[in-house]
Image (cartoon, rainbow, N blue to C red; front, top):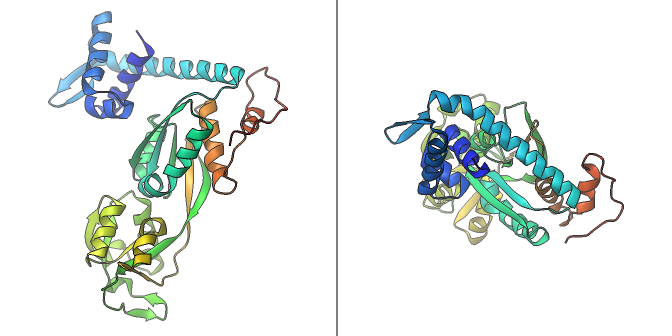
Length: 323
């Protein structure tokens, strides 16, 4: 029995789907299937029942799952101790990020992180705020980055940046009626919005509540699963949307979109982590990097070691600048 087999078993068990688990782990579906089959054959057990295209845990699998997860957690804790002792930032990190952050805010910051910590392997999955929250809660992601509100009280949440939101329409869109000067009639607009669970949609829901109406009172013309699809639909004249300035700044500057004056609150870009999981040295380095890169563009590894020394380890006094 290997740690890789256990990781694959836990991923398949939690998702109930071989292909999705393989994609999460960055391996082929056949490799995941072979690992599960080898684990079952080595120990003469039946861990999963195959039901159509999906699979579900057999009784033995249900009994084995908490033990497998416990072994993986202990292995991660042992690795963390060795990292602290060696003061070497290595390993792999899985990040779940909502769409605006993953597409427009995160890439440059991960590139600079890689320059500082080339031995750390990074993988990013993209979803809406609810999906990112779920990934951090079930351990599929080491940390998450979201724009919307999170609901679980076992997540730590820390602001890493601020996002400005805009109401935009196509440049050819007719003038918008106003309830009062600078206050557009949102009930008179035809809306293009994201799916439920997205941070951008939450902003429109909050705006509607402030107006004393519900989302059902608005003319929802189209619900789309990505910011890019929404931007293109709005550019084509299909309606209006509220969206991050990061997504539409170029289109507004080039004149294909028009910004409509509306007082919208800024929203936080936030990092979320699980309260009960011990962070590896690589996770602490990334958290420090994302938390400081917007203001300072640098992070110091000594600050990480000083804040989280291994048991019995002397806090280092020498600062090592990484970038």
